[in-house]
Each structure stands twice: as structure tokens, then as C-alpha cells.
Length: 309
Image (cartoon, rainbow, N blue to C red; front, side, top):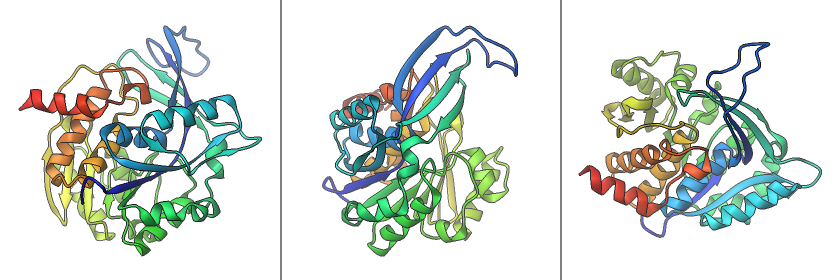
């Protein structure tokens, strides 16, 4: 693939309400927060922004509510180099919402209301199918209705558009959907839910990858947090270490990885170099607070990588 390769992202858009606390509240406990902000998020939008800022030629299939924040998000996505023509406004519905607690260790707890994201139906996908047909790759997550993810994957596979799935939030998936996926990018928890293999070591990661290959998926990337990524292609696996940085919060780290990874692949980078590029983008993101505000631009990623060599 080349510099002119096109990316389609299908997924969710949320307004993230983020509250920083010393510790997560137990049931019935009230904890006084230290810092509160509203930031633009949603796994689909985060990954689209990561790809747009990393340099991808990208169109985003998504829905916002008929509210002020939905319009502000659409404007911001345009500034992030994203084609928002397939992002429709759903009247009488609110833009999706995520309520996020971040503790003193930078870990997070998240509750989500789908809002307009629930309107991303198979019919909506069909209305925007030309975006998928014209793309070289389609990147998706699981904050959209599952039947819509399946509909989009089906269109993509019929038109030789590569399908990349980040299976988050964690849920079980049908063999029908898994068979349509070219690259899957679960974390340890998601890999265990999909395969039944608890991923606590490289050997476990290799076994989980094997189970996913058996479902017809050619390339498996299991993200292992600080330990990096287990990359397996047709049962040949290796762990690619990440970069060590001081994390402020891990919101959108995985999303940044996914958007940057597929951007690098569409530019023709090898799988190994694409993972390193994505590691660099995610490393920068965790040193900053919030979801989309933390996502780096291309010159920052290139500079970071130059300093590592």
C-alpha cells in the first residue's frame, strides 16, 4: 500500500466527562475529585483522530446527537484531518457520553451511554458503504451495534478492503464475524474472552493468537500494556517491546496505538515497524491527560522515534 491509500473508520463518538480522584469510590462512598474536564472521546473517534493526526487519508462513519457538543465534535474532527461527510447528526438524541474516573495510579473506570451511537445501524452502514468500498482498510471497534460491525465487515470483505478490528469493549464474537477479519488487536482481557486463554505470559499470548488464527484471522496483535505487543502472523509470533515513559493516564492509549498502527501499514511500513510507530504514538499519549487531547501529531511521533534510535 502507498501514501495514497485510504482508510475508513467506523465507530463511536462520545463526550468524555473525566474526574480525577485519589482512589475509586467503593459502593456508598463519596470521594472529592481533584480535577474535572470534558474532552472529546469514543473509541471510534479516538482511533480516527489518531490516524488523522498521524497522516492517514481518512473518512469516519459515525453519528453525533442533535446537540451543541455534537456540532463542536464534528468541527474538531475536521481540524484533525478527518473527512466527516459520513458523520450524520441524529435529531432528538444526545451525543454519546462516557463518565470516567481516573485514580492516583492513572487507571480508569468508565461508564458509557450510547446515545446517537445506537443509530449507527446496518441501514446506516449501507447508506455510507461507498466509503468502505473505496477504502484500502476499514478499522472498527465494538462501541457500535454488533450487527453494524458485521454488516461493514461483510461489505469490506466483498470489495477487498482489509478489515482491522479492535475488539473493545470486551465481548464474545461470532465465528461469522471473526472469519471476516484480517487483523485483530485485543488486549489481554479481550483475548481471554475471545479464546478462553488467560494471557499472563508470552506463551499464553502465543496460544491465544493460535486460537484466533484458527478462526481465520491472519494477523493477531495482542497488546500487553507495559510489556508491549505480541505480534503473530500465521502462527509465527514475537513480542515487540514498547517504550518506557511516565504515564499520566492511559485513556485512549490503545486507541492511539490502533489508529497509528494502521496508518503506518497503509504507508507500506513493515508489520514490525508499524508496531514500533504505534508504540511511539501510544507512549506520547499516556504522558498527557484525556482522550483526544493526548493524541500526538505526526511530527511528534517521528521525533520520538528518532530519539530512540
